[in-house]
Length: 247
Ligand code: PEP
Ligand code: MN
Image 1 (cartoon, rainbow, N blue to C red):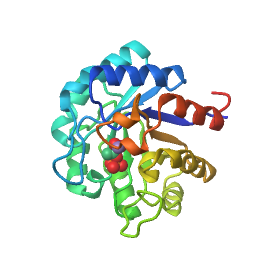
Image 2: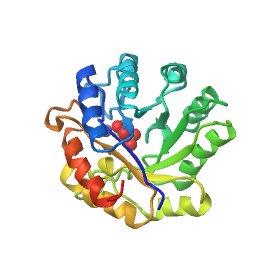
Image 3: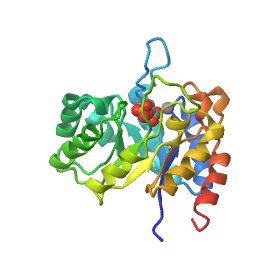
């Protein structure tokens, strides 16, 4: 059986210590790709908006020390060069950015022909063609890394126990359009609560998605963003052993 794609790490990079402690914990659980956001797309102003380019050095250190691939959100075309210089392996396109074809096209142009993997989150609204269109913009730009998609749920006015509603028919539709495209699930932004993350992760794998993109923090209660939904590395390790006993 081929291994699932697993990416884990904090919502936001906060300090060198927090990045390295979280990376150490996840590496010990067998995680080989580490995520951390540097430019944070906050819904409303006045919240922590990320440490920015400074954090690239901390991610690069995690890469060197633990041999992990590193992933961060590429929020606009201006920052593309910074990510490429820092040796970022995976750039993800956030759910808010993915809603805007102008932004997506600018980012795709900035990465034209580059060797970096690009994972495109679903747009915040359930518009499957907009999601596929964003993926196609990167394909047409001839990205030499791998492309992937991430189901992170959709915004809804109706509130239920989840923060962002999963609509499994939409990633399954995407799979029918593009059978070769790996589709991951971000159970953290769907669940919105750490206790629900394992349930969402199991659902995603049950419907046949290819991996998980999960938020994990060395001290979730003190996290500067998305504190409620982050697992400790040990909690994530327990989930990982359940879903991939032979990892
Ligand atoms: C994130 O992954 O930290 C993030 C901001 O995700 P999204 O774009 O899915 O809200
Ligand atoms: Mn987050």
